[in-house]
Image (tube, rainbow, N blue to C red; front, side):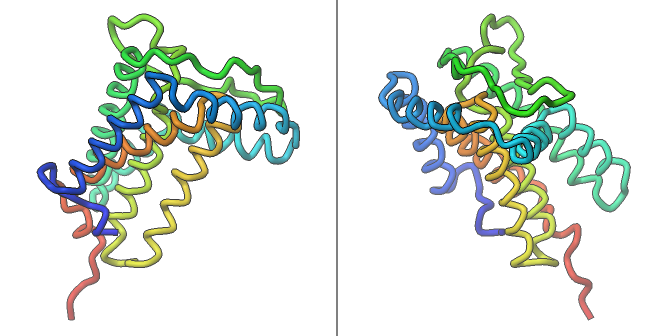
Amino acid sequence: MQNWIFDIRSRSFVLLVISFVIVSMLVYFQITESFDQLIISFVADNVGNPTLDTIMQIITESGDSFYMLGFGVLMLLIKKTRRVGITLMILIVLSTLLTGYIKCGIDRDRPIFDYEGAPFPVKISRDTFALFCEGGYDASYPSGHAARAIIFGIILGYALSERFPKGSYLLLIYPLLVSISRVYVLQHFPMDVIGGTILGLMLAGVMSKKTKLYKIFEKSKP
């Protein structure tokens, strides 16, 4: 997992920035529009399995900033994981605001399909925040949920990487599921979650490098 961590002046960070700019331009100039519409139309036509619908809605809600911040507060209350909690909370707030303002700039509408899956007691969240920017709430690119989910996976995985070198990679399954769920509940196009994931990787990689979270759970030396 430590191979995923990099400095802001590293080649990895520069490549991620370039990738994010390219993906953003593809979306802005609607070059990928036919691809996105094809995927989202297929998903809209195949939603309707009650069990899968409920699972996907639970997964997508777990990426809401409110729940993410709540987890960060919980980590903050435990002395050993306090650094993890602070790092998570900073990145969750930063990524939520950053994706909100980028949404205002790209100004891409969310999928027009109405989600007709199994009823869920909580309204599917959008949680886009951008002060002094109108329309960001209904904008689609990039996905804040995808950005926060990859941040969650990278930060926790990095913190556990010294003690569980291979097992820590299993945490990357979570951001993958959140990204799939955002498309499944018709809140985002595929390119939205790709862009959000790249942005989250940039933020988590740099922040993890600064905080050295892997030392929290490192094995005690004999």
